[in-house]
Length: 381
Image (cartoon, rainbow, N blue to C red; front, side, top):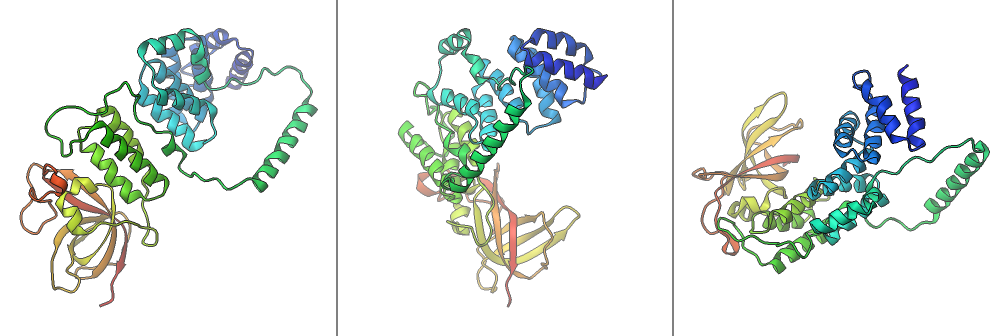
């Protein structure tokens, strides 16, 4: 019975009889409460019928049941855009572009965000019916057409795809989502006026930092990008700029000992930990206060103390993987900086950043510094 009901709904949907789909499926919510196809079909019918509240509810449930369907994400993004929730729409379209770089609907939405749109222009866009260009594509209207033609068409497309894959040039960009993240429109202020920020920039400087961060991510110079992004996040940049900077930071990946580049010294990070939050470092030292649990290994890294001559500092480390390491071992640790604001820095030769001598005239910020271990090598003594 369930399959028959959904099958009939699909036929009605292909026939563009969206109201009939809604009348058929809405009374059956309890029966189909765990069925992805049900919520997707009903959500799309509501979307094309103009019931955006119902569409959002049903598509969101479909997304909960299956979060990797790009068409559902496109539908959710369209509703966000209609509601002027541009940051949420941006996130959703970026999800689609990451999964399917050539998706035209997502690219169209990102182009609209890139150009910027006033509330009046958005309303005109909706009233003109062009909002449908951001909807997930409709399935074809199947008539009793010849199956042979379809089969031949598929075979022809398969042959073309094979030749294209064989002779096409290598794809240059492997982070397509980075390229489409743009600054807010020219009509939006890029900086805020107010105290309490570590960095104070002009709009031109914010644009330059943002542009540099994108170029560095596309060149896989993630550590350089992290610092430029953090400069934006710690600055007087407007919230809309910071939101886009956080999206860029989401593309940073963990390196290996072989691939890590542009690392920072303990002395660099100690001066301003928040500036390096998320950056990868390789520090040498000795293991102390080792503790093991089912979920993690924790210890203090005595930075620079591998030969027991000079102690630069003590940094808490957590490892989410098994490691053959013991107290007193000298190690090279590849880790990711985890810095968090602190009302008071810890005393002594600790992991906390000092509140003096911050670089570049930056307003000092007390912060706690730790490392999330990525990899570890023991050093033979």
